[in-house]
Image (cartoon, rainbow, N blue to C red; front, top):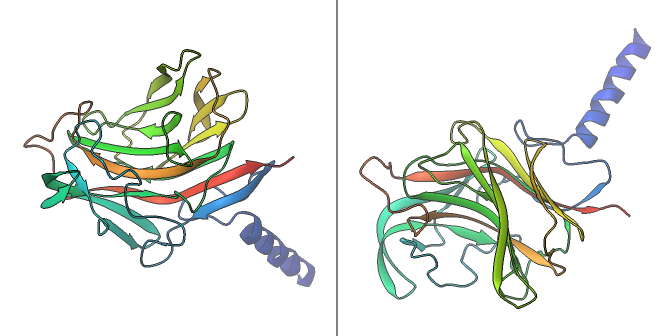
Length: 258
């Protein structure tokens, strides 16, 4: 009996050390990978040592309708919520009727190659445009790696894309989409594995798209945001509910173990 109890305690300790996770998310430790960055959002506010609560560009893009404000973030119960609301704010040279949030690891964390993942639940409704993506440091474009883009009026469809310049220095992109469950109904894990040869996108650990075209070979930082409106999703309509939120369980980045 004593030996069995000791064995149980030892096994429990190993599970705690090797399978630390937030909520129902996956383990922090992954075979063949070294954890380089993670935020489990276990505090009471956005960790400003890890994130900038602003758009690093500070400009309007894609004719989006929101103003990015630094009070759009709420951390509670191990979940980060990026809130989109109806409200007046000046941004990008215009007065806006919606506010929302963007956060990035610009100048705080960047990495060349690796595994980048987010576990989140997206908002539903026309005009909602959540994203998890990577941009080069220092500021520039392209390249761009879009790990997750979902349009609120079709919350079951995931878009996975990377942008690059061809040999003539013209903008090109290569991407795919995958129709799955309603990603606004519950949390799911979205990830990209980026190597010198290819990018592979995963949803809940299952490969859904890959690209071997024009891989970027420079450090890139992470961004998480909830846009409102724009050329692609269109403006919110009368059925879109506010406030809306992109809910994030964790963001993690790994580097390959040599």
